[in-house]
Length: 218
Image 1 (spheres, rainbow, N blue to C red):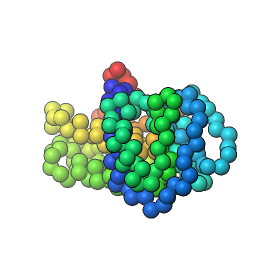
Image 2 (tube, one colour):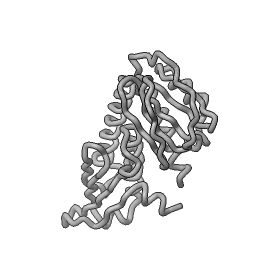
Image 3 (cartoon, one colour):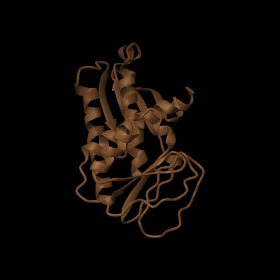
Image 4 (cartoon, rainbow, N blue to C red):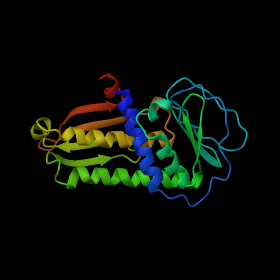
């Protein structure tokens, strides 16, 4: 399940890099260095600075000039790496391979901001699709907070529990987790809460926390 999660994230990365055009060039190439953490997503400037290394899946430093995002090797196991790199570089993003198999994507702050805006738009469209497409009849409404860390999903309970509409909600969950990754959320706060409410009674009948729920399936 962990590898599936990584695969979905890197697939989303490729889509967003193509979608949000880069009006600014990154200018300098990414600095080479040792990366002792496989699961690290880090942002840093081109200015010299002390990087604090911590145990955990993700480390993010937001600074002034450029943004570096390091993808762990596990995210590329099922991916066409050369194609992904070519798409990124076509958008003015510098990609540097690391000794541990990970890749560091370096971009301007403006390009990163464009990518975040594109992801926000994509999330909003996905939420609207759940409510209005007609493909998920048991789902009545979906409301998210500004950071996409908590959702209220209003459903016709019996119909929902006897359908596969929950898989559609899971798609939004992956998008929300991905959004938080690249917005620099602290690893300890990295989660998405889905609160399910019965449309008939207004009662909250279930609450699921991700990625905890995914880890329990391993």
